[in-house]
Length: 257
Length: 340
Ligand code: SF4
Ligand code: SF4
Ligand code: SF4
Ligand code: SF4
Image 1: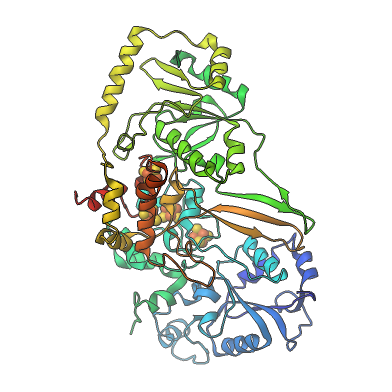
Image 2 (image 1 turned 60 degrees about the vertical axis):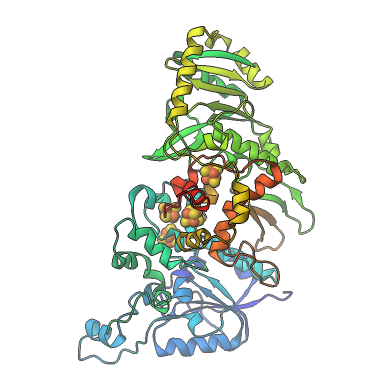
């Protein structure tokens, strides 16, 4: 790209953690602001341009309300490339953790019988609604991976993100395996790398916050823990948290009626 | 071949003395069942009881991740070999790991010579250490339970001393420099060595018959063993990472925001990963898990044997210890042989 790419950074329903991760690139922020023309970023600046066509849109969060969907469709329409950032945008993440419970029930539980003004729909990731060009999961995203993507896009290239498990990174760091040594439920084998096996390196099982690898072997993951005497429910409770919609899509978790 | 004796009373002095020849790395205990090779800060840290580290010594020569070359002006590449001038002493390699390095020497030295690997390999002294097998060791079946070469010094433990075998002129220099710590061996030492050696031989409980294994594998390509294994394997890649002879890598460019500084990075890869055999155009030659698992086993006991006359498995037991779902390499081959 010769001209500075025009970009926008957006948040749907989310904790804003991924946008914060970008703001936390303190040493690189000036270079980013220099290399890109940041037209629209509500969280970080005033005077945002809401109409000009964008070369790249970075979108965080899930669609959990009707207005998220409207916002997302508008972003998609004005952007050449859409990068889904964060596990919410890619897999549903924390916001979709309880998707098996219908919104009507949840609304009553949380807000009581009287209040019926909350516009809540089943929480689903960005890629369930619009075409995504690049997926960068992470809860929140890894600064290094974000910078790699930004650099590749500046070169006019599509980034290549490695697609192997946290276990491999865990072994490269020579950690004791928490499954082998302690019989704990660790999501390492089904979770995509990128965090450099952060949790097992601190003796905590991987919770799966980066979302699944390209081809999850659900059955084999169940078997691994069942043969150690752990129940299906417990396995699900520990492993499905960040990608509940995918587990439901596999019919491994069903809707509570 | 020269063999001397190092009394255990002199052992710490010997380890400290190694500091004169470079940075000494030793096996250290990391948790209940976990050992790693790491720099020696004090001789008391050496875990002489260890059997296998998580990652074998390959990590020193074939690094998990490293930049091969860089460029900073957007045009010319600058070659970059990490640790090229670092003198390293690796203390405590068991025979299987010495064989592991001998296998990697073949892999990285045949046809195209990998200068990154050899730049570090030639600056490293290897000091071997004897061992007593556990239930995961099957090096004896692989012919890697002892070694006559591939080390500068090799220490065989006796009750109150070590027999020190000199395997190279650099090893000889060390024994000359440290001659005050060493003594001559006696008949008694020889007898003690033989007794321990025979005891060790009896301790091997795990066996793998490899006599006609490549032939059987050729016949068993379509065996249901591979489908079953594909159903169990998570393709997590742990077994490849920890294997002393797995040596696949991926290469990619790491770009920077100023679009001028670039690094070409090499990183460990595994044939078990889904996208390992994807080629331009998107076709995946091993899209099924079962095909990928089979590939790893065939490479160790079929492909490598046909190409180099020996298997590329050292029987170290690491893949057995670190598979989170308890896939056991010897059981797999026994099933293929119809012997389970
Ligand atoms: S601790 Fe977890 S991430 Fe590490 S190897 Fe074991 S299962 Fe994989
Ligand atoms: S180890 Fe797992 S839970 Fe921890 S940061 Fe990495 S992906 Fe997230
Ligand atoms: S295949 Fe397993 S036993 Fe053989 S060398 Fe590799 S890790 Fe060791
Ligand atoms: S360690 Fe076990 S589960 Fe993981 S890839 Fe190897 S054989 Fe499969």
